[in-house]
Structure formats: structure tokens, C-alpha cells
Length: 245
Image 1 (cartoon, one colour):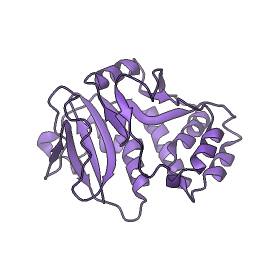
Image 2 (cartoon, one colour; image 1 turned 90 degrees about the vertical axis):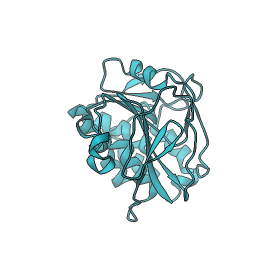
Image 3 (cartoon, one colour; image 1 turned 30 degrees about the horizontal axis):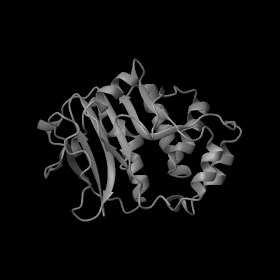
Image 4 (cartoon, helix red, strand yellow; image 1 turned 180 degrees about the vertical axis):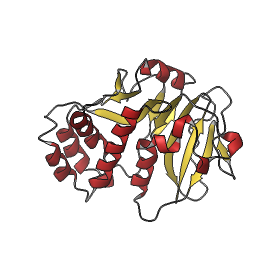
């Protein structure tokens, strides 16, 4: 198994980290993006449809889901000052980006307007996310998560109990499936992401539980809400993870 980064398009970039087996890479975005992709490569690039592939060496000390969350939450280390870090691309392929869009591995992008529309949803803010379509409470989310195989044996309930004095019931919940960020990441957002990552390391990689806590404890700023429904929108479908049960 290995981790890969996938990205496309300049001056916008969509980024994801997915786990694949052998040489099998999901081909989900073949022609929907419409324009020729920019290259996000290492010395031995691969391409799948509109995605360029950057193989990432597995860290045997980290759970694969936690390693993927590093790229998700710590984008400022992947794109310092709005450029792909040296270790992920050769000098000739390090263009500047002014926007990045994280998408989870379960997202299948269907619309060529996806990144441009995400830029519009960002408006003048530093970052944007979808509102959770089903719940607005980390305690209800913890109950739902506890039954999923991917969170089995994780301290889900002790985590949210530790947040109870800071996060009230029905205190809001974001869907962390898509994260739109202005690049380079503003300093205040960088601090939020560092704190968010620290909670993932301290407790669990169920990142939806820790974000409301970090935002309330540290005073935000909250991501600009994307009002369209995560499950039913004009841009993408969400495919079930095989290990989500």
C-alpha cells in the first residue's frame, strides 16, 4: 500500500491523499475538469486522467489515515508560500498557486467548474468548507462515528468529553470532505491548522470532532460556509469508502 498526492490545474490546485494497492490508482476525474492539468510530480510522475500523481513514502510509524490527514490539515507544509514543496516536485514544476482545494479520496469530481465555483464560494475569506449535511453537534457525530469500523478502538468518547466545557451541544459541525484555502495560507489560518493537527495527534483522526473545539478555544476564524448540500450538488459525487462501515 502507498500514499499518493493528486493535483491539477494552475493557478488553482486540487489536492488529495489516497491509499492505493500496488499500481491501482482510482481513475475518477478523467475528462470532467476540461482543461489541461498543471504538473504536480516527483522525479517519476504518473498521470491518471486530469490528475498528476506524486507517490508519497509510507511512514510506518503512522496509521495511513493519520498520514493522509497530515496532507489534509497541514497544507501550508505541502505548499509553503503558495508553491509545492521542494520534496514533492522538481524546480521546473513549482508554479505559484493562489488557491488550493482539498478533496477527500471518496470525492468523484463531475463538473469542470468545480474549482472556479469553489473560488467563488471562498469570496473574500481565507478558507471555506461545507456545512455538515446531517448533524450540527460533535456529540451526535461522535455517537455516529463510534459505530464505524475505521474509528474502532479509538478514544472517540473521551475526546468529545474533553471538549464539553468548550463546545456546547449543537454547537455547529463542518463537513471536512472539501477544504478551500487561499494560498499562501494566512498566518491565522496556519495557526488554526497547526492546532487542529495537534488534536488529531492527541486524540483521533476523526477531524470533524476536533475542528469546532479548536475554533471555539482559539477564537476562529471559522471557515466561510458553503451552503450547497455535500450529498447533492452540481460538482461531485461521494463514493463510499470500503472501510467506512
